[in-house]
Image (tube, rainbow, N blue to C red; front, side, top):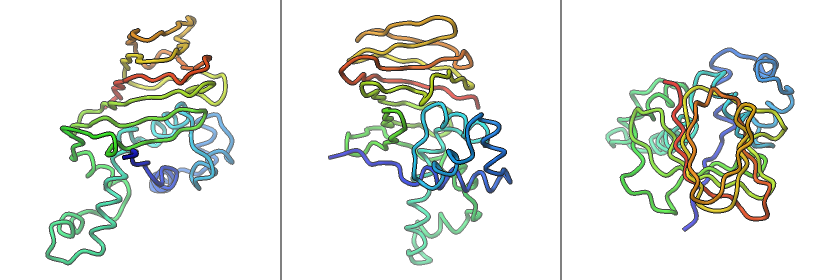
Length: 223
């Protein structure tokens, strides 16, 4: 079974932005990108890079965890709309305010696991050759448990800039090779190497090799 792509990422980010009363131009200025890029992401014409996704969620006051979890909330809301008033799904949905932010908040109480089969993983296909597969989630902790793949030439930023965000991250490389730029250092990671650092340190990952680089990552976001 293939993992399940997480749909409508851009659409949900747009609804959150509108709910916050932030214009496309204001968000673009804060992230240092073009307004057209934000529009392309929101309409699904382009996928964000890792750095842009973190930048958008940080600016809008939501977490990457919410981007995954809101797909489940959307599924529940859609199912509840067609369910009978007496069903458990309809009862769960009926108490929710009709906003994306409320749906995102409600989704935090859900659990992914305890066993997540390969075909049940939620997947985010990001720009610049990066794929995230969600391996599990307990309610409330701000931790992303991910299988991350960098295709040859893939990078966490579609440009050469470094990214930074709240929290910390821990990674273990299973196969392939990665170059981690961490502050002023450039570190080469081989299979079996592990890393851990404060995510507020400017950083960037890239795959200069000919094979995909695959690893397991824990990313703790600021609460």
